[in-house]
Amino acid sequence: MLRKLLLGVGPWIIFSLVLRFGTLELINVAWISFFILHTYFGWQYLKAGNPLSWASSIIFVALFLNSVFGWVYWALQYGAQICYGVFALTAFATIVFKHPFTMTHSKMNTPEEFWHHPLFLSINNRVSGFWACCFATNGMVMMFEYQFPWLTLITTYVILSSAIVFSEYYPPYLQNKAMQRRQQATQPSAA
Image: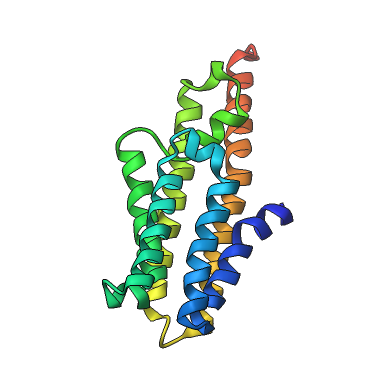
């Protein structure tokens, strides 16, 4: 679990410190590095068509190009808010279109015979919904970045960490709960 937390939140910590304290050149390097690392480590998700992975890649490239060419000044200032907003909208859209973005990861770790089970779909909808809410919350929290720089930084990492922990523990919890209900339903009642 610690490894997942570090891998999930660690790059964001480094990236946000660079955005906060770096020069424009360092920020450009950070955007392109984040894109390269995201593409390298997330290649299987991109190949599988994961909407959030594609949205992330596109937004990282767009923000990098914007910082190089200076098309939109406010996008330079509000890169984190833009990212979280795009992530939240993408995550909510995947739920609305009945293909939660977490399905890509779940299908890589779940036998195919369970992919169309209502519990599998329900878990993915809930986990994707939780992530979407976390992204939206982080986007709103980051609106106060200039008034409370360290508080917003810590808050966003706590929120991301909670999403990682939720993603790890909620699916097995719901599966165990469903198994218990199933066992209770099949046990003969004592009359």
